[in-house]
Picture (cartoon, rainbow, N blue to C red):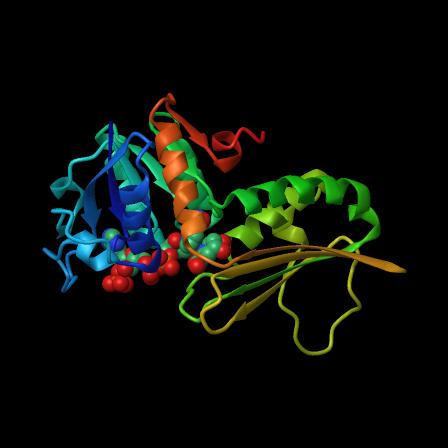
Length: 267
Ligand SMILES: NC(=O)C1=CN([C@@H]2O[C@H](COP(=O)(O)OP(=O)(O)OC[C@H]3O[C@@H](n4cnc5c(N)ncnc54)[C@H](OP(=O)(O)O)[C@@H]3O)[C@@H](O)[C@H]2O)C=CC1
Ligand SMILES: O=C(O)C1=N[C@H](C(=O)O)C[C@H](O)C1
Protein backbone atom coordinates (compact mmCIF):
# COMPACT_ATOMS: atom_id res chain seq x y z
CA UNK A 1 0.00 0.00 0.00
CA UNK A 2 1.17 3.52 -0.83
CA UNK A 3 0.18 6.28 1.56
CA UNK A 4 -1.10 9.35 -0.27
CA UNK A 5 -1.51 12.94 0.90
CA UNK A 6 -3.24 15.72 -1.02
CA UNK A 7 -1.98 19.33 -1.08
CA UNK A 8 -4.70 21.83 -1.93
CA UNK A 9 -7.16 19.39 -0.33
CA UNK A 10 -9.86 22.00 0.32
CA UNK A 11 -9.92 23.24 -3.28
CA UNK A 12 -12.09 22.17 -6.21
CA UNK A 13 -9.59 19.53 -7.35
CA UNK A 14 -8.56 18.66 -3.80
CA UNK A 15 -12.08 17.66 -2.80
CA UNK A 16 -12.51 15.65 -6.01
CA UNK A 17 -9.17 13.91 -5.35
CA UNK A 18 -10.25 12.93 -1.82
CA UNK A 19 -13.28 11.25 -3.39
CA UNK A 20 -11.19 9.65 -6.17
CA UNK A 21 -8.52 8.19 -3.85
CA UNK A 22 -11.23 7.01 -1.46
CA UNK A 23 -13.04 5.20 -4.30
CA UNK A 24 -9.89 3.71 -5.89
CA UNK A 25 -10.23 0.26 -4.35
CA UNK A 26 -7.67 -1.54 -6.57
CA UNK A 27 -5.09 1.23 -6.98
CA UNK A 28 -2.90 0.20 -4.04
CA UNK A 29 -3.34 3.72 -2.61
CA UNK A 30 -4.51 4.72 0.86
CA UNK A 31 -5.40 8.33 1.71
CA UNK A 32 -3.45 9.38 4.81
CA UNK A 33 -3.12 13.16 4.64
CA UNK A 34 -4.93 16.32 3.54
CA UNK A 35 -3.09 19.63 3.58
CA UNK A 36 -4.56 23.14 3.41
CA UNK A 37 -2.50 26.05 4.78
CA UNK A 38 -1.71 27.75 8.12
CA UNK A 39 -4.26 30.59 7.54
CA UNK A 40 -7.08 28.18 6.84
CA UNK A 41 -10.21 28.32 9.00
CA UNK A 42 -10.88 24.67 8.08
CA UNK A 43 -7.90 23.07 9.89
CA UNK A 44 -9.07 20.04 11.86
CA UNK A 45 -12.15 19.49 9.68
CA UNK A 46 -12.39 15.88 8.47
CA UNK A 47 -11.42 15.82 4.79
CA UNK A 48 -13.99 13.14 3.97
CA UNK A 49 -16.75 15.36 5.39
CA UNK A 50 -15.38 18.24 3.31
CA UNK A 51 -15.46 16.12 0.14
CA UNK A 52 -18.93 14.75 0.88
CA UNK A 53 -17.83 11.11 1.21
CA UNK A 54 -18.41 10.69 4.96
CA UNK A 55 -15.97 10.70 7.86
CA UNK A 56 -12.50 9.35 6.97
CA UNK A 57 -10.69 10.22 10.21
CA UNK A 58 -8.22 12.43 8.32
CA UNK A 59 -8.29 16.07 9.46
CA UNK A 60 -7.07 18.97 7.30
CA UNK A 61 -3.60 19.99 8.49
CA UNK A 62 -1.51 23.11 7.86
CA UNK A 63 1.84 21.63 6.76
CA UNK A 64 3.31 18.57 5.06
CA UNK A 65 5.31 17.79 8.21
CA UNK A 66 2.03 16.99 10.01
CA UNK A 67 1.04 14.36 7.43
CA UNK A 68 2.33 10.83 6.90
CA UNK A 69 2.68 9.86 3.22
CA UNK A 70 4.75 8.23 0.47
CA UNK A 71 3.27 10.17 -2.47
CA UNK A 72 2.01 13.76 -2.45
CA UNK A 73 -0.63 14.75 -5.01
CA UNK A 74 -0.43 18.53 -5.42
CA UNK A 75 -3.21 20.61 -6.99
CA UNK A 76 -2.67 23.93 -5.23
CA UNK A 77 -0.90 27.11 -6.36
CA UNK A 78 2.55 27.80 -7.79
CA UNK A 79 4.27 29.05 -4.60
CA UNK A 80 3.06 26.33 -2.19
CA UNK A 81 3.65 23.66 -4.83
CA UNK A 82 7.30 24.71 -5.27
CA UNK A 83 7.81 24.67 -1.52
CA UNK A 84 6.22 21.18 -1.47
CA UNK A 85 8.67 20.06 -4.17
CA UNK A 86 11.57 21.09 -1.89
CA UNK A 87 10.01 19.24 1.06
CA UNK A 88 9.50 16.04 -0.97
CA UNK A 89 13.06 16.26 -2.27
CA UNK A 90 14.49 16.64 1.24
CA UNK A 91 12.29 13.91 2.74
CA UNK A 92 12.43 11.23 0.01
CA UNK A 93 8.75 11.46 -1.02
CA UNK A 94 7.30 11.06 -4.52
CA UNK A 95 5.06 13.68 -6.10
CA UNK A 96 2.25 14.00 -8.63
CA UNK A 97 1.94 17.65 -9.70
CA UNK A 98 -1.24 18.87 -11.38
CA UNK A 99 -0.77 22.51 -10.41
CA UNK A 100 -0.30 24.84 -13.40
CA UNK A 101 1.05 28.35 -14.02
CA UNK A 102 4.80 27.70 -13.70
CA UNK A 103 7.24 29.88 -15.65
CA UNK A 104 10.30 28.41 -17.39
CA UNK A 105 12.57 28.89 -14.38
CA UNK A 106 10.07 27.21 -12.05
CA UNK A 107 9.67 24.29 -14.48
CA UNK A 108 13.48 23.93 -14.47
CA UNK A 109 13.38 23.83 -10.64
CA UNK A 110 10.91 20.92 -10.78
CA UNK A 111 12.98 19.17 -13.47
CA UNK A 112 16.06 19.42 -11.29
CA UNK A 113 14.15 17.95 -8.31
CA UNK A 114 13.43 15.01 -10.64
CA UNK A 115 17.13 14.10 -10.47
CA UNK A 116 16.58 12.73 -6.97
CA UNK A 117 12.79 12.45 -6.64
CA UNK A 118 10.14 10.54 -8.64
CA UNK A 119 7.79 13.25 -10.01
CA UNK A 120 4.89 13.16 -12.47
CA UNK A 121 4.20 16.68 -13.76
CA UNK A 122 1.23 17.09 -16.11
CA UNK A 123 -0.87 20.15 -16.89
CA UNK A 124 -3.73 17.86 -17.80
CA UNK A 125 -4.25 14.42 -16.28
CA UNK A 126 -7.20 13.30 -18.43
CA UNK A 127 -6.72 10.36 -20.80
CA UNK A 128 -8.58 12.18 -23.59
CA UNK A 129 -6.40 15.28 -23.44
CA UNK A 130 -3.24 13.17 -23.40
CA UNK A 131 -4.43 11.45 -26.56
CA UNK A 132 -4.98 14.95 -28.01
CA UNK A 133 -1.33 15.83 -27.29
CA UNK A 134 -0.44 12.85 -29.48
CA UNK A 135 -2.90 13.74 -32.24
CA UNK A 136 -1.88 17.39 -32.34
CA UNK A 137 1.72 16.39 -32.98
CA UNK A 138 0.59 14.37 -36.01
CA UNK A 139 -1.67 17.21 -37.18
CA UNK A 140 1.21 19.69 -36.88
CA UNK A 141 3.49 17.48 -38.95
CA UNK A 142 0.93 17.22 -41.77
CA UNK A 143 -0.77 20.63 -41.66
CA UNK A 144 1.44 22.88 -39.55
CA UNK A 145 3.65 24.63 -42.08
CA UNK A 146 0.71 25.54 -44.34
CA UNK A 147 -1.73 26.56 -41.61
CA UNK A 148 -2.40 29.36 -39.20
CA UNK A 149 -2.45 27.67 -35.78
CA UNK A 150 -4.59 29.02 -32.94
CA UNK A 151 -5.22 27.54 -29.49
CA UNK A 152 -8.47 28.55 -27.80
CA UNK A 153 -9.25 27.63 -24.19
CA UNK A 154 -12.25 28.24 -21.92
CA UNK A 155 -12.35 27.75 -18.14
CA UNK A 156 -14.50 28.67 -15.13
CA UNK A 157 -14.42 32.20 -13.69
CA UNK A 158 -12.24 31.16 -10.69
CA UNK A 159 -9.19 30.10 -12.70
CA UNK A 160 -6.21 32.37 -11.96
CA UNK A 161 -3.53 31.33 -14.50
CA UNK A 162 -3.78 32.00 -18.22
CA UNK A 163 -3.39 30.67 -20.79
CA UNK A 164 -4.15 27.34 -19.14
CA UNK A 165 -1.30 24.90 -18.52
CA UNK A 166 -2.88 22.60 -21.10
CA UNK A 167 -2.96 25.35 -23.75
CA UNK A 168 0.71 26.09 -23.07
CA UNK A 169 1.57 22.38 -23.33
CA UNK A 170 -0.33 22.14 -26.64
CA UNK A 171 1.69 25.12 -27.86
CA UNK A 172 4.96 23.45 -26.81
CA UNK A 173 4.07 20.17 -28.57
CA UNK A 174 3.14 22.03 -31.78
CA UNK A 175 6.19 24.32 -31.69
CA UNK A 176 8.53 21.36 -31.04
CA UNK A 177 7.13 19.33 -33.92
CA UNK A 178 7.52 22.32 -36.28
CA UNK A 179 10.99 23.29 -35.09
CA UNK A 180 9.73 26.64 -33.73
CA UNK A 181 10.55 28.34 -30.44
CA UNK A 182 7.33 28.98 -28.52
CA UNK A 183 8.89 31.81 -26.52
CA UNK A 184 9.27 33.84 -29.73
CA UNK A 185 6.39 32.61 -31.91
CA UNK A 186 3.53 32.73 -29.35
CA UNK A 187 1.00 35.58 -29.62
CA UNK A 188 -1.20 35.98 -26.53
CA UNK A 189 -4.49 37.70 -27.40
CA UNK A 190 -4.87 40.49 -29.97
CA UNK A 191 -6.09 44.07 -29.72
CA UNK A 192 -5.98 47.23 -31.82
CA UNK A 193 -4.41 47.75 -35.23
CA UNK A 194 -1.42 45.55 -36.04
CA UNK A 195 0.35 43.82 -38.89
CA UNK A 196 -1.52 40.96 -40.61
CA UNK A 197 -0.96 37.59 -39.02
CA UNK A 198 2.45 36.00 -39.60
CA UNK A 199 2.16 32.32 -40.62
CA UNK A 200 4.78 31.06 -38.16
CA UNK A 201 3.05 32.49 -35.08
CA UNK A 202 0.96 30.34 -32.72
CA UNK A 203 -1.98 32.30 -31.29
CA UNK A 204 -3.56 31.82 -27.87
CA UNK A 205 -7.06 32.98 -26.89
CA UNK A 206 -8.40 32.71 -23.34
CA UNK A 207 -12.02 32.78 -22.18
CA UNK A 208 -13.00 32.81 -18.48
CA UNK A 209 -16.71 32.28 -17.88
CA UNK A 210 -19.19 30.55 -15.59
CA UNK A 211 -18.48 27.03 -14.39
CA UNK A 212 -16.76 25.57 -17.49
CA UNK A 213 -14.53 22.71 -16.28
CA UNK A 214 -12.05 23.00 -19.17
CA UNK A 215 -12.36 23.23 -22.98
CA UNK A 216 -9.45 23.32 -25.42
CA UNK A 217 -9.49 23.68 -29.21
CA UNK A 218 -6.55 23.69 -31.59
CA UNK A 219 -7.39 25.25 -34.95
CA UNK A 220 -5.34 24.64 -38.09
CA UNK A 221 -6.64 27.05 -40.76
CA UNK A 222 -5.30 27.21 -44.33
CA UNK A 223 -6.72 28.60 -47.60
CA UNK A 224 -9.75 26.44 -48.34
CA UNK A 225 -10.08 24.34 -45.20
CA UNK A 226 -9.95 24.26 -41.42
CA UNK A 227 -9.27 21.38 -39.06
CA UNK A 228 -10.20 21.69 -35.37
CA UNK A 229 -9.31 19.34 -32.54
CA UNK A 230 -11.46 19.92 -29.45
CA UNK A 231 -11.40 18.37 -25.99
CA UNK A 232 -14.08 19.22 -23.42
CA UNK A 233 -13.83 18.07 -19.81
CA UNK A 234 -17.26 17.90 -18.20
CA UNK A 235 -16.18 16.63 -14.76
CA UNK A 236 -13.09 17.22 -12.59
CA UNK A 237 -13.22 13.50 -11.79
CA UNK A 238 -11.53 12.83 -15.15
CA UNK A 239 -8.43 14.76 -13.93
CA UNK A 240 -8.61 13.21 -10.45
CA UNK A 241 -8.75 9.65 -11.83
CA UNK A 242 -5.67 10.45 -13.94
CA UNK A 243 -3.83 11.74 -10.87
CA UNK A 244 -4.73 8.58 -8.93
CA UNK A 245 -3.43 6.46 -11.81
CA UNK A 246 -0.21 8.53 -11.86
CA UNK A 247 0.31 8.13 -8.08
CA UNK A 248 -0.20 4.39 -8.29
CA UNK A 249 2.21 4.12 -11.28
CA UNK A 250 4.80 6.33 -9.58
CA UNK A 251 5.08 3.94 -6.64
CA UNK A 252 7.26 1.63 -8.77
CA UNK A 253 9.42 4.24 -10.50
CA UNK A 254 12.96 5.42 -9.79
CA UNK A 255 13.76 9.16 -9.49
CA UNK A 256 12.91 11.07 -12.66
CA UNK A 257 10.62 13.70 -14.14
CA UNK A 258 7.70 11.97 -15.85
CA UNK A 259 4.40 13.05 -17.40
CA UNK A 260 1.07 11.41 -18.21
CA UNK A 261 2.42 10.15 -21.54
CA UNK A 262 4.74 7.92 -19.45
CA UNK A 263 1.95 6.88 -17.08
CA UNK A 264 -0.40 5.98 -19.95
CA UNK A 265 2.32 4.31 -22.06
CA UNK A 266 1.73 6.78 -24.92
CA UNK A 267 5.33 7.84 -25.46
N1 LIG B 1 -3.32 18.90 -14.19
C1 LIG B 1 -4.65 18.82 -14.27
O1 LIG B 1 -5.22 17.86 -14.81
C2 LIG B 1 -5.46 19.90 -13.61
C3 LIG B 1 -4.82 20.94 -13.02
N2 LIG B 1 -5.52 21.88 -12.33
C4 LIG B 1 -4.74 22.87 -11.62
O2 LIG B 1 -4.77 22.59 -10.22
C5 LIG B 1 -4.64 23.78 -9.48
C6 LIG B 1 -5.79 23.89 -8.46
O3 LIG B 1 -7.01 24.05 -9.15
P1 LIG B 1 -8.39 24.19 -8.34
O4 LIG B 1 -8.57 23.03 -7.44
O5 LIG B 1 -9.43 24.49 -9.34
O6 LIG B 1 -8.09 25.50 -7.49
P2 LIG B 1 -8.61 25.88 -6.03
O7 LIG B 1 -8.32 27.34 -5.85
O8 LIG B 1 -10.02 25.43 -5.85
O9 LIG B 1 -7.71 25.01 -5.07
C7 LIG B 1 -6.42 25.33 -4.68
C8 LIG B 1 -6.39 25.17 -3.18
O10 LIG B 1 -5.05 25.31 -2.73
C9 LIG B 1 -5.14 25.97 -1.49
N3 LIG B 1 -3.86 26.50 -1.01
C10 LIG B 1 -3.39 27.76 -1.01
N4 LIG B 1 -2.19 27.80 -0.41
C11 LIG B 1 -1.90 26.54 -0.04
C12 LIG B 1 -0.82 25.93 0.63
N5 LIG B 1 0.21 26.66 1.07
N6 LIG B 1 -0.85 24.61 0.84
C13 LIG B 1 -1.89 23.87 0.43
N7 LIG B 1 -2.98 24.39 -0.19
C14 LIG B 1 -2.96 25.70 -0.42
C15 LIG B 1 -6.17 27.06 -1.73
O11 LIG B 1 -6.61 27.59 -0.49
P3 LIG B 1 -7.69 28.78 -0.40
O12 LIG B 1 -8.97 28.11 -0.70
O13 LIG B 1 -7.60 29.24 0.99
O14 LIG B 1 -7.27 29.77 -1.43
C16 LIG B 1 -7.23 26.24 -2.46
O15 LIG B 1 -8.11 25.60 -1.57
C17 LIG B 1 -4.59 24.91 -10.52
O16 LIG B 1 -3.25 25.24 -10.78
C18 LIG B 1 -5.24 24.28 -11.76
O17 LIG B 1 -4.83 24.88 -12.95
C19 LIG B 1 -6.88 21.83 -12.22
C20 LIG B 1 -7.57 20.83 -12.81
C21 LIG B 1 -6.93 19.78 -13.58
O1 LIG C 1 -7.79 25.23 -13.48
C1 LIG C 1 -8.47 24.32 -14.02
O2 LIG C 1 -9.65 24.14 -13.74
C2 LIG C 1 -7.79 23.46 -14.99
N1 LIG C 1 -6.52 23.60 -15.17
C3 LIG C 1 -5.66 22.84 -16.00
C4 LIG C 1 -4.94 23.73 -16.97
O3 LIG C 1 -4.54 24.86 -16.60
O4 LIG C 1 -4.72 23.33 -18.12
C5 LIG C 1 -6.33 21.64 -16.62
C6 LIG C 1 -7.81 21.74 -16.82
O5 LIG C 1 -8.08 22.31 -18.06
C7 LIG C 1 -8.56 22.41 -15.70
